[in-house]
Each structure stands twice: as structure tokens, then as C-alpha cells.
Length: 357
Image 1 (cartoon, rainbow, N blue to C red):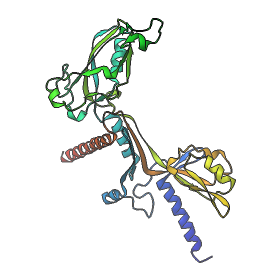
Image 2: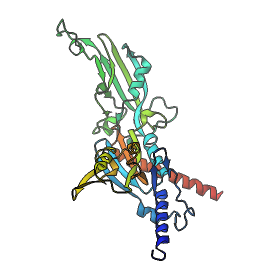
Image 3: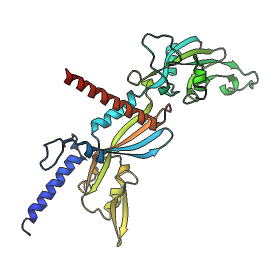
Image 4: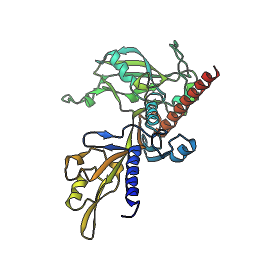
């Protein structure tokens, strides 16, 4: 053994273990290790963990992975869990939208009670840019053109005189027997017709079923929509889902060959492990750990569980944002960042005020 070679190997192994503790959340058979962040100043000899803006700017990045009409998936790398969770909570509860706040029911002879009808109307997402409106003042019952949208829903069910006598199909027997969101008509207030004449203000989806009627039954409702946030009521939340997960990390601790390679592939989600052949021998390789759901199926097999290390990258967050359709998902992310920046400025101003006192 070369002098110092053994100690150098021990030091390298120890440093590798420290790196795993610092950078990975490790999934074990009966628990999860390294859950808490430990890279604070002075905790690890030889590491400079003091926060530096330049280093943060170099390491932080946002990568757009998938962008569709109402769905956005992106990676946010180089941040702490507290910041990622704050961003998620802002998306859920602090980005404002327009939603039904008051329902003036002039006639409702359907079997749906007034309270249930008002509740169903409140949960219909309204296609209107909340940035064009102000919050309604406390105690203002009427509302104005700058803080209120008005819709009318007036539907009456009648019989179809041309229906077949022996028919039992409601679609043929009745007119307007199903009340849909597309029947909500926007009634401009004040000069809204001029301000928003080119904007299509309406429910996001036309096919939301509100109630079912029979001949003689009628619904006549006027609703007022106001600006609000999900913290006050879930109907104002602009997202159907806003979630994140840590990037999976799968490490093969030793070569997995032959039949074990096929068995290993079946333990993970499709596309994570591939079995390749070289020189007539099959062996497993990790192709795309991002696709894994971290089911820990591998720990059910004694011949495999010691050959693989399952983990998640501590500072790599995969965000999934699904909009309700009120705003595009990329706009929601931008608005959430503005809210977070406003919170930071407010906190800094409060600190300055305390220091002055």
C-alpha cells in the first residue's frame, strides 16, 4: 500500500458521505434520512456555507420543462424548501382572481335549494383578468365598474311540442332542461362595455352543469363577481393544483447484470431503467430518474435492495402548475413572484423601521 494511500481513500469516502448528507434526501426501506437542511455556517469543517448573493445567483436557475394551455411544469434549482413552499402557497392562496361573491335570486323553482345554487355559481371560474379590477371596499354593497362584474342567468324549461309521444329522452322532450354555465350572460356596469368591449368576459368553461329543470321550472339569478384571493375562499384560487416534488436520484452501487437487470427494470416506473447488452451480457443502467415515482418497490427484493441507493436532490424542485383557465399558467407564476417580492420588500421595510426606532 502506498504511504498515505489508505488514509486518502478514507478521507474521500468520508467526504462522499458528507456530500450525500448535504445534498440528498435518502430513501430507506423503513424511513427517510437527511430530511433536514444541515448546510448552515460552521456545521461542516472545510465547507463555506455562509450565504452569498453571487453564489446564489450562479447556482439558482429555472428551467421550463413543459408548457401547455393550462399546465406548466418547470424546475426551480438552488433554493431552500422554505422558499419553494412559500411560492407554492402563494400560487394557491394569494394570487387574486374574479369570482362570484353575491347571488341575487329573483326566481328559483328548481329542486336545487337557493344556498346550493349560490354555492355552485360561486365555484364557476370566470374568464376575466383580475389585474384590470380593484378590490371592493369594505361595506360597499353595490359595487362599481372598477371592482364588480355582473352576470345574469335566466333559464326556463318548456316542453317540446314536436317530441315523439312515446319518447322518454329528456333531450327530445324538453327545451332548456339542463342549465349550463354558457347561459350566464355578462351585463356591463357603467362604462364597462367601452372598457372591455374587446375582452371576452365569460365563464372559463361553457359546459359546467349548474342545475336540471323540468317544464315550468325556472331560474332567474343575477350574480356579482369581485376580486379576491384563495386565502379568503377557495373559489378565488387560480390553480386547480400547484405542487412540487424533489428530483429523484437513483444510484447503482454495483453492476446489475443478467436476470437481475430485468428484475430491476420492473421495480421502477417505465423509462427509468433500461437494460442494455454488451459482449453478450445484459446490464442495467439509469436512463431517466426524473420519471420515477419513488415507490420503493425495490426494497421488497432482498437480492436488489443493497445494490441501489434511492434519493432525491435536496435543492432541485419540480413544480407542476395547473391553471383553472382564468389566467395562463406562466402568468400565474409571474404574478406569484410579484407577490413574493412584495412580501420581501414589506419585511425589509419593517426591519428598517425597527432599526430606526
